[in-house]
Image (cartoon, rainbow, N blue to C red; front, side, top):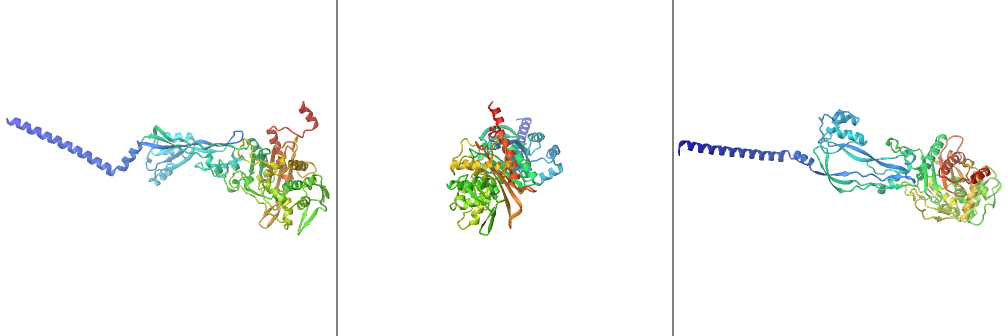
Length: 568
């Protein structure tokens, strides 16, 4: 072998070793880098890997819709968006951060400081329930770590007109007041789940499959007629304002079914504006506030007398000399009515007359009828915070309490309870359970008095609206109306207040074929007028008159000339 060949072989061997050493160095470098990344950059690599892997995201579902009896929406869920940040991944030097701050109605310095303070967190709300238009503008900025999710916001089209019934939800869509609260389990929704693929900026690039379908809430159709609700709200608000009253309530029931057609209160608030949700305006006074009903329960005392068989509407009762002593209490009428029949006791609202009727009946007769009519007990309507009221048990020796109970003192009721009690008088002695939910069929009715007794008392109550009665301002042109006024002193810490009153009117229309039962209660009217016949009766007239026309209920008290025209 020549020297040249030997040198060439050595050179080739040296080059092979060099290549092998280089390969080993490259492999070692790669291995070292892998070990470095695994040990030192594990969190970074995991984050980047997660950003490119499959994710399970929530699919929002809307809460059930609340409508009136005609399908008009009272509470709906409108699509909105939530803007949130992952502070740990947010690029605080991004060029579009200033634009984002403007969209969020803040400045870049405040926004950056807020994100920097929460750098260790992975989730932070920036703004909730924004419009889809704003959300799209934020999404278009493509700021790393800033995300937009879809959700729903509760909206109340009728605002303060129906708020005491419907209530409202919190930001998370959970019922807080009213029917939103009591029917939470029925209305609530359950978000679905979907498997998606996202890019490193958190944007969804591909929908893989549905893991769990979204469950939308169930709808509720109320018995309320929004037309009548608006009418009642307008009339009640006008009366409370004109008399500078502390508040008021109006309840209107379907006489045949017991369904609530309208229920309004003052003061009220707009549920779409959280700033208006002050404690004094939140409660549904028609269901939560109790008061002594006063003379509005005198028809029930008279009904108990007729049911005893001792009396007829024509039976004479001596109320002379216009007052009577019961132990140490003097019971008075406005004047000496002398000897009057039972019907006139209602017409003139005689305290002496109903007291004598009550004393002539077996012990507990009046109280038992009150109870059977639903006074002093919850209606079972399913509304949160409903008051039960108070109806005392009285013995034979409690003469004063028995006397005052006969004309509406010593017990307490809600406006809805009082309206429910009048259903028996309107429906020929039968009471249907009251309901805020539209009924396909009336609930199970209970007879509490003979039909003829109810008819007789209803006709007696019609005289209250005559020129001789205390409730003539409740008259509705073209319709026969039956009702009863009530005026009671409010109760303070030291007893009854001399200068504060509750003014009420409870009535039925039209008398020939009762369709509506309505109770109006005005709390502490100021000024010279404070009697129920002066304050509450006119509200009844306007609200019920408008409702009868809206419902196309034919008049039953037209003059003869108008009747002849109607026949043609």
